Image (cartoon, rainbow, N blue to C red; front, top):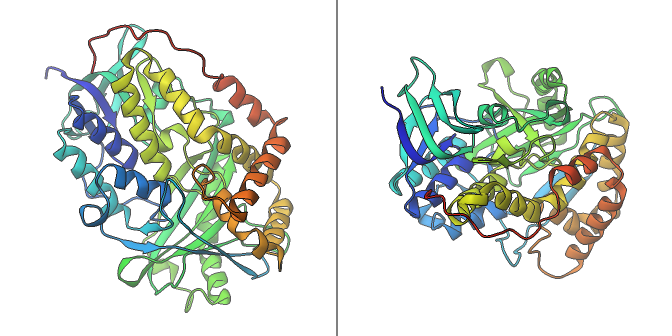
Amino acid sequence: MSPRRFDVLVVGAGPAGSIAALVLARAGARVALLDKARFPRDKACGDLVGPRGLQVLADLGLAGPAGPAGLYVGDMAVVGPTGRRVLLPCFDGHSYPGRALSVTRTVFDDALRVAALEAGAVACEGRADRPLWSGADIDGFALGAGEGDGGEVRADFVIGADGATSRVAHSAGLVEGPKVLWGFAVRTYLEQDVALPAITLWEPVRWRAFPGYGWIFPGPGGIANVGVGIGTRSDRQAGARAVRELPDYFVHLAELGLLERPPDVRALRRLGGWLKMGMVGTRPGAGRVLLVGDAAGLVNPLQGEGIAQAMTSGRAAAEAVLGSPGTAAVRYRDELARAHLPYQRITAAGHAALVSRPWAVAAVGRLLTAPRLGDALAGGWGIFWNELLDGAAPGRARKVARASTWFGRAATAPSHVSRWFTAAYPAPGPVGPVAPTGRC
């Protein structure tokens, strides 16, 4: 079978890959959108598309009646280790709406993929197996034998949107394994009406906090998304703890009054997945390979959000390829630095420092939900926690979030994580004229 040739090969048809393919195809590029799964397919996730993600959908004409059907939610409750609750308000910013969308990944991912295909992207089914090289650059992938379409797919650019364990990232040598901040999350669906999305900071043993958090989020049709996520740093064996402790977490939710009763775990369909958080340990691109979404580590280290970052990075990668094909990797890296680096280098360093210290996690959780203090910080905490400072409306909450950023920058500056970012993301300099390449 002769190889198929495209301008861009996008590996992975989740939110990051589908948005990249959509933007490229609308601009007239010949795009292959490759995924190993047959859609619609399920995905482990909390199923919340945050305010920045909703803005991307609106910008691309995919919001409202034209977009995926789901349930809009606003404020979020945070329940501390002592049971104390704080309400994080959700309000409009200058560049994003004051709400989120609860929608299953089965529905959401399929809708974005269909939009990309309708724009002109070509669907390919199969696993990116063996990288194909042209000199020092990856030129495409041979698809796994006996899977999907088979054969070879070559392209001028490859965008890796294939998740936390990205084959593209490892093939291109863009991952420094010991530096990566790994996490693992497991979730299930329960028939339960939920008034407010809630995150719980849990201590299975007093003053020995679970190194992550649990959640119960409302969903369409009275179905709640319930799960736990754990930070493991570079120890991926530790992810199994999330699965082991899920039954005890259900008991905890019932004790808090957030569940009517603990379910029989044996009767539930559970789905888990790896998270690569905080950008640290993965360079976002080199040569003609760019990484987006989870493949680039674009997951919030504090609360695990990744859908909004996936879509913004997918759009940014596509625009870099279209606008600066000769310097796409540099332009894309600089855009990620502008949009995410100030937040990610603080929170990744904080995550790395705290996750192996359960007493410290417990102390932070108790402090942030303490009487009076928790309520006083709630507005700013909501902005900082959700990476919404850039574009936040003026007011007390923005001041608190900005002060948190200043404090976080000073506190984490000496860390090894911060030093890694300094080396991986040099200050942007002037970019010379773009050499014509004939690509895109």
